[in-house]
Image 1 (cartoon, one colour):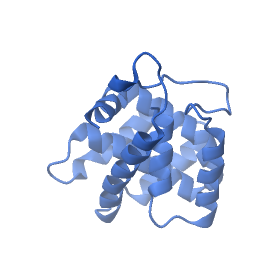
Image 2 (image 1 turned 90 degrees about the horizontal axis):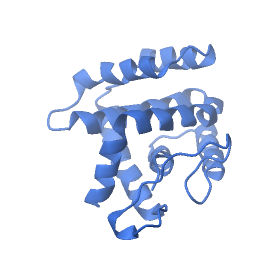
Image 3 (image 1 turned 120 degrees about the vertical axis):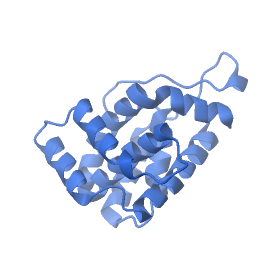
Image 4 (image 1 turned 180 degrees about the vertical axis):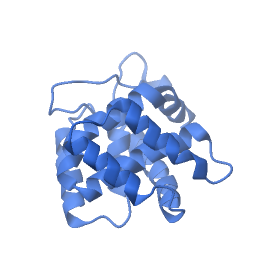
Length: 172
């Protein structure tokens, strides 16, 4: 299983998708190869190995889709609660466009939305969903940015929430 596949499933499950966003997600889906790696830049990321998969790491497509859908449902709740302000999305888009968005700035953006999460939701899960939701909102704002930003978002999730995502996979 890979973060790429989970994030892609999340993006596909987002409600109220506009046509350009859907096309950008479909194009993105075509660039993720059968092992869950992005083909666009030649870079690869670590596979997650499920306990029952033995020594052959691989992508459990169904598990990735289920996790992405589950996280997207929480993202829908966050949307209804209006946890992420449009000004924050616009600021991130501007930083992407002028090449000034850093992982630290993105982390600050994620953390700035945490103060408003509903009670009873783990902070790490909420952070992961907010990072994914920001990715979706960036793609919806300017669909042409989704392809290039996706790699950055995956890297950010890998760097900050890898252990949490692995734990989610093991729970399934």
